[in-house]
Length: 206
Image (cartoon, helix red, strand yellow):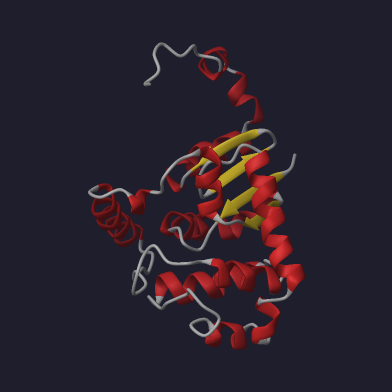
C-alpha cells in the first residue's frame, strides 16, 4: 500500500506531526511529499486557519500549548503566514530526505527563524551542502508543481495529510486514527464507517 505524507513548511501542524511521524517512515514506507498549501486552498476554494481573524489567534495559542504539552520545541517565525516557496524548493533540491525536512523545520519552527527566501534560509542551505542556485533550479520548481498537482488530484484539501491508499487523514490531530488504519487496514470497512463515507447531504448553504 502506498502511503504519502503531504506537508508544507508554512504549517505548524505539519511540524507537530513530523515529530510523531519521522521515526515511522521506514516502518510503514511513508513517502514525504512537500506541496504548496496555498495552491491546494485555491483549488478547493478555501482559506487557511491563519487567514481567518479570531481563528488565527486561537490556533497559534493552541499550537503553542500543544507543543509545550508534548515536549516539542516550538517558536513561531517572525511573521506568519509567510511565503514557503524557498523552503519547499530547498527540501526538494535536497532530495526530500528526513534530514532535509528536519533541517528546514528546525530552522523555522524550533528556532523561530524566517524561511521565506533563499537569503533567510542560507544557513540551512549550507548545512545541507547545497548552493543557493539549487533552490531556483527549473527541475526543482517543476517537481514542486508536480507534487502539488498530484496532491490536488488525489483529493488532498489541507496539510498535513497522510494518504493511505485512497484514504486521506487530514491534520496532526488525525495522526492516531491514521496509525490505527495502518495497523488494521480493514478498520474502515466497518459498516458504520462505510455508511458515513456516503452519508447524504441534508442541506447546503447558498
